[in-house]
Length: 118
Image 1 (cartoon, rainbow, N blue to C red):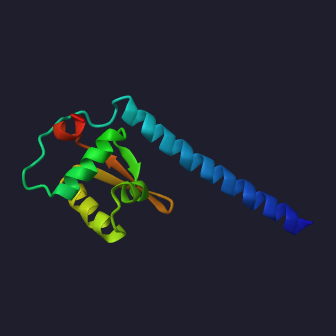
Image 2 (cartoon, rainbow, N blue to C red):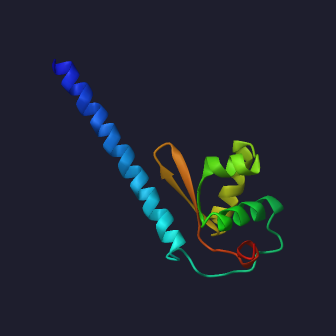
Image 3 (cartoon, rainbow, N blue to C red):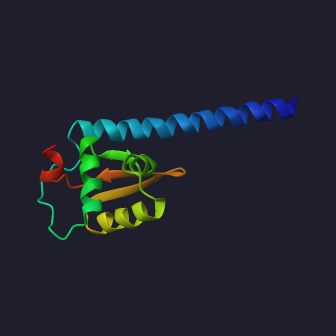
């Protein structure tokens, strides 16, 4: 009987944690859609690789917030290639990568005029 109660408590705790994570992501998406994300519009540098431009364009089309796995699927990229590109963009100040449990959320920090034009 005690084992059953503990199992129910564990499942309940897992459900609450999952809900809280989704609520945070929903809040992040709402902030991005309402314009609370970075509003500065910069020109893309000419030395930015085409892959990086594609990632920024995709993020701009999706209100500036996507899971890393979604970007990987949309662009058909290997995990390692995307990781290197996102690291470059993060170091350049274009995106922010936040851990959400086992997943990475990529947030557009500086929307670009080229990406916003589409």
